[in-house]
Length: 189
Image (cartoon, rainbow, N blue to C red; front, side, top):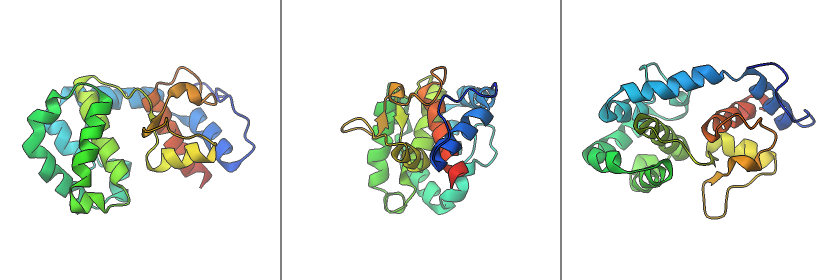
């Protein structure tokens, strides 16, 4: 990414974090990771995402935020319904089904990081099937960053439309904006 692409002036800590996140974002690396999910079977993608792994099998940075036992319990509940999950068309219906299942799994439902687990698994499975989020999902750190910028999700949804975040250059799709907001929150903290 070219330096100076951020279109927001760094006045607050979150705005400064957003500028740094945009300026350092590895757009091509993110695209490679997203494409790598397509090279796996649906079952492999489910296994790796639930257990906090990237498509290539290395530990994901989110793995440190959620206990292995919590992730494992989610996988144990999802694997028997893998055919149902694979038949779902679109990111939002897949996310909603995973969230619905996650609320019924005691270790996942009580986890402060349920939204991270659900988003990570939904993103990986959707990427495996060729679907992209239609909005910027405001779970965990992206949600904190958005709130600090004065932004809220769409009414009745867990995401906001990409066009509502003018500070990020338009060339970034919603799923990359989610990455950028997550990093912005970490950088300003």
